[in-house]
Image 1 (cartoon, rainbow, N blue to C red):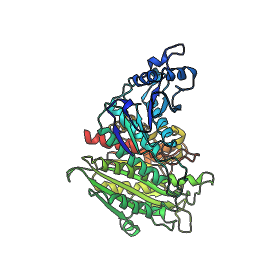
Image 2 (tube, one colour):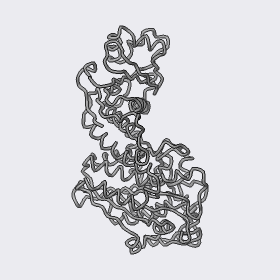
Image 3 (cartoon, rainbow, N blue to C red):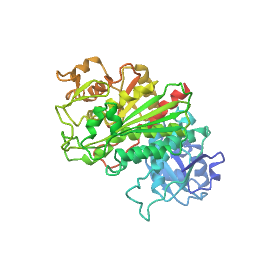
Image 4 (cartoon, rainbow, N blue to C red):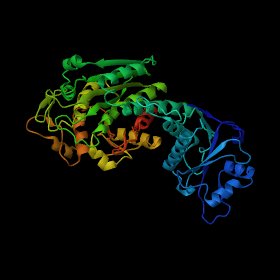
Length: 498
């Protein structure tokens, strides 16, 4: 898909479709058409008041996110897609994103492949024109994604959007940013959507190599079982030993800054399928455990978005990839595992496997002497109970790092929310048989998982993102969301600008 800025009059646009906003004003206002955007008023005048009459009759909806198609309007060669924006007083950044996605989805489901979008530069929003342009472009990119790896489109399926122009005074560099971030989101969504018989640890390793082939500034290293055994990565290996597909540690390195500059390291949980192991999960919705590698998918997506943006940073991406399966060799409740750090872990639940693979990946990542480490994982169902599907959880003992991530989430509208990581929670991991146990019981399950990881990041500037509710919507079949690629990419962009 191509993005551009249309600087001529909107009426000069020759593509398929024109998209414009419709605001709901006072219900007793008999002249609400004149209180719409200047373009709405211009088209209303050209159509001898047709738009205004349709708005007053209710045939054009101003309800937030509702879309209306108009064809063969007098004075217009293009189709019109009108998008309800609600009351101007209620027009927030979140509403803006919602109406952009509604417009993009309606366009993608139509047979129009090109459009001029006049939703940006809204006077009802305090956000800058640059921000509006980037968010709008990202929503069109998001709506244009369709999974096709194992299901091809029907012969009469709506075609993909090929080009969107924006009626905006913003900097066109925002479109380049949107394309790069959108690419990263697509990488994450496609990996998350792939079935587990295709997307396993070996596939992830090969896919990472393929993504890096076109990036001369990226180096890839993959540690196999023998290499991990030599490093005593027994926690990661224990999780993968029950599968016939061996685990892998995948590391990618981008050099965008001086060689001596400390890298920013993204670490992702890559459990390509999670049965729970010996502590096997219930059968209902188990097929969704293919999404348990969305942490890995996310860090890969954000990494390659940053590479496309050519950020002046050194960035590393580390993926702990394994499949958690039960067989005669699988690790068991009651086992005591010695991690790469030398710390021992009593396994009480083999379904708490994400923290097991991450602890070794975090220990290995410290070899890179990072400026900061952010790990990303679909770690706990408790996080979905706490925050639902609207936000990722962030935990850290470094308040400045949390502030950076919260700001990046707010700016990108891919938000996170801080949970405490107080020392008082650490005692829930105490056991007389090892340095720690791998679960802390029902209370504060997400927090004690973060406490577990914190024991492997001592002396590091580190944060943990639990994306269990953000990566996909539980119980639905809508696919991976690609979150929080936007958050992580924005955080890296902010570091590059600081």
